[in-house]
Length: 143
Image (tube, rainbow, N blue to C red):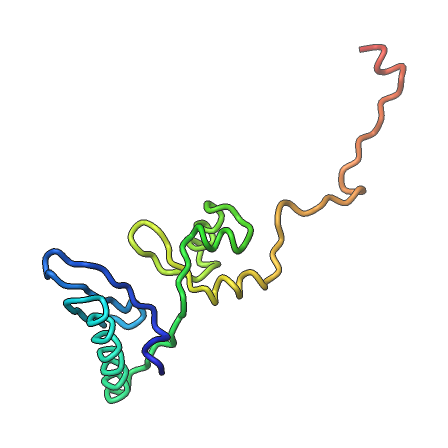
C-alpha cells in the first residue's frame, strides 16, 4: 500500500516545538519533524514501518479511507441539511468517525450513500385510505 493514500493530519505542537503528523486510520501511527516537509517525510516512513510490523504480527492492515469530509462538505454533496447528515452519522446509516464534537466521513462512504436510493417524507396516501363523506345540505343547515 502506498503511504500517500492514508490521510495525514499535520499540526504544530508548542509543547514539542515540532510539527506532528497523525495518521488516524492507523492506530498509534504518528511522526514529527522540525519542518512540515520533514514531518511528512518521517510520516511516510512510519506508515511503511507500521504496515510491515502489522503484517509481521499477522494483523490486518486497514484499507486507506481516502479523503475525509466534514459534515458541511458531506451535506453539500448529498443535498441534505447539516442536521440530517449528523443524524445519519449518529444512527450509523452513514459510516463516520467521531472526532471531537463532530464527525469525519470518508468520501467514498458519502459517494456510496449518495448512490443509494432513499425515501424522503411520509409515504403518499392512497385516495381510498381516507375519505371524507360530504354532509348533506340540510344537516349543515340544522347545526
